[in-house]
Each structure stands twice: as structure tokens, then as C-alpha cells.
Image 1 (spheres, one colour):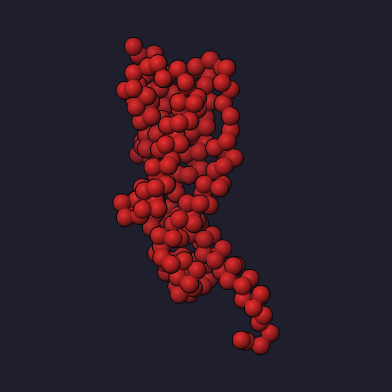
Image 2 (cartoon, helix red, strand yellow):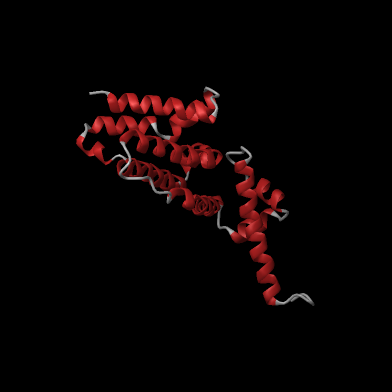
Length: 194
């Protein structure tokens, strides 16, 4: 053991390195790098590549930690209640506000997940969980959908998806408010259709 370095000091340094590695991956993806390499993560964290793999068995386990961090950060948004006695349009608007806030927060991480999902069981599982979460939130917000055709629920789920939002924000370069308005207009047209 090195002189002046206690076992507790090594543990603390290891914990700091682990956190810096996670922070670096979070920052790189947040800055728009959908697939940072272990070398890029290590460089940003100020550690060697071997240190990355001392703390994480592979990039898959690092992605799992990243997903956990994003999920924890979203918890306050995910638990925001929607007034169950409000009229349908008000509840739809609240659902859209909620989704847009979540989508704005997760955008770079969701895009990165979509790029890497084909080769990552962790990201496949996270995506499936997110799809279930958004569907159940929609049904809880608009319980009257249970009495409407299943195709309507499927169509609303598509229109209100991250992918639709991302297409409008990215490919069509619409601002946040205009994107939200387009989604509302489309969802209301579906709800009004018989």
C-alpha cells in the first residue's frame, strides 16, 4: 500500500472516479454524442480507459447506470398528477404539457438510446418500459378511451409519442410551443373523429 493512502482513501477515490465516469457519459450524450466510446468517456472523466472498465464490466453496464440516472432525474416529472375531474380537452392539454416536459428533458438520451437499442438489451428493456409508461399514463389521463375503438388509442399513442415529437422538433425544426400545438391539434382531431 502506498504510504499516506488509507484503504478508505482508495475507496473514496474509486467512488469519485466512478461518479466522474458516469457524469462524463451523461454529459457526452447530453451534448449530442449518441455513442461515446470508452476512450471518450475516460478522457472526459480524467481517468484511464482501464479505470472505466475497473468500475464497469462493459459499456452495457455503463448504459444501464446512465438509464438509471435518467429515470431518477425524471421521477418528479413522472409523478405530476393530472386533475381527473377536468374536462377531456383540459386533461389532454395537461397530458401534452407533461409529455413535452419529459421529452425536452430526455431528448438527447432517447435519441442515443434509439441509435444503440438494436445492440443493447438494457436499452431495449428501457425503451419497452417507456412505451408502457406513456401508454398507461395516456389511459389514466383519458379513461374514456376504454370505450373507444382500440385503433383510436393506438393512433393517439403514435401521435403523442417521443418519435412524433422528435420529428417535429428535429426534422421539421419547430419550436417547443408550435410542436405542442401541432400535437394537440392532431390529437383533438382524432378524439373528435367518429
